[in-house]
Length: 76
Image 1: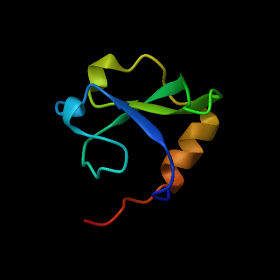
Image 2: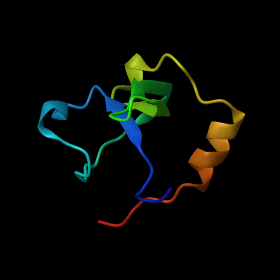
Image 3: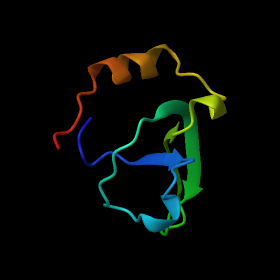
Image 4: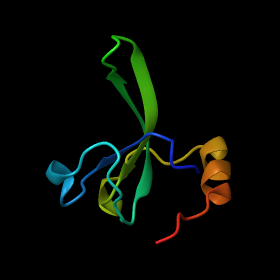
C-alpha cells in the first residue's frame, strides 16, 4: 500500500490528536468501509480499520484479504 491511500482508523487512543498526513503506528484490524462527504460535496468511500480487535464487525472479503496480503509495511 502506498502512502497516498486514504484509510479511516477508529478506536485509536490518540485519535483526537491526529490530522490528515500524520504518521501513526498502530495494530489495526480491517473493519469494512467508511463513507463520508468530501469538501467538494461528493461521496467518498475508504477502507476502515479499528485499533481494537474486539470491535471488528465487518471481516474482510476475499478481495480485501488479497490487498492485505500484498501490503508491505512502510519503514520506520
